[in-house]
Length: 489
Image (tube, rainbow, N blue to C red; front, side):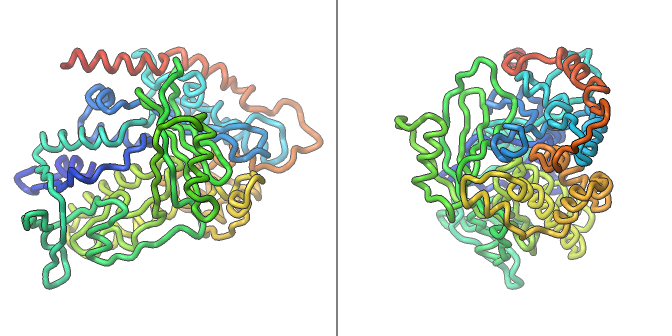
């Protein structure tokens, strides 16, 4: 991703970009999900969906569904749909009903019913509309990360990036402490003026060489491990959403690709060992007798004290990670690259530009952290110490405390989000979806005034069902893409 965005930002005669990658070290590649930010990435590098999606077993993603996180909410599941242009017609209705429900009125507040992508997810329809539909749709993707990495490497090379298949064995610094060169096997020396650390949790440059401290989020994000198992795609109607199902000591993702489902149990090793986690995942997936080998992963949840230090930028897992919930990893990587390009163009190696970049990225991680922490803080499960400890944990940021305080005091949450300047992180609609989905409401009032349900009064269901008629079943969307690829070939 970084190489492609760099190649777009700087002409090859001004900046030479080299990507050094070991063929012996694979990617995590468990079946990935994204936010709509990735759609913008492909638009920025001018790569159409028909060019990359079929090659990467990719599917569309319009929503994230949460099952079993808050039994007391009265909802077995709730959805956090991606918001599109058409939703400007229904979003105020949704937030208005949420406000009425906070005052004890019995109104409809299931977030998936108020947004077109939520309705498409229920019908398993893709987000590509007929040409007569005049609104812009926002959506993300599911894809095979290994195949996408290979595709992006090929794309970057075609745009002037030098791709070096080398295994780095050591790193050389100059007398001032800056990075000077990578030393590959065979004592090959690869020099550069600036380095980008994409070495994952190993953090070869930013931590092992430059010693930049890692700030752990373990005090309020307990999960540090995952076990992964694929399953075949058997449903005729392919889902168009990621599903996150709460289990005894964590949660399981279910991500549909065209050729398989990616499944993984994210848990805390403080509450569950790896063998027990694998057994629980196999039971959940109906694979207790399967010979399919599970993969076990460990996670470092947190972020770097400095994401850009000296002449090194850390990206991806080397810069930080806030567990897979809500698919924020690629979002934070892409935003970091875009911000780096902006600040580097302003001042190159000037300290004030580097400091401004670090403040912005650090804040991005903190505010995304708040949104993820809220998922655990608001749970109403009673089946294990893990869930109870998450709910009782009071290690909350000032920002998160203020948001929850405004909500429970029946204040204006949108105004609070704007006051804190949070719209570029998770905006007011996202917070309304989360809090409403968890049933973070008082008891219903004994006296209920006459029809005040804006969902019914505004005819939201009728409008969105009518809009959904402009869309095809998800598999048909993907078939059209494949046929388009053949025509292009």
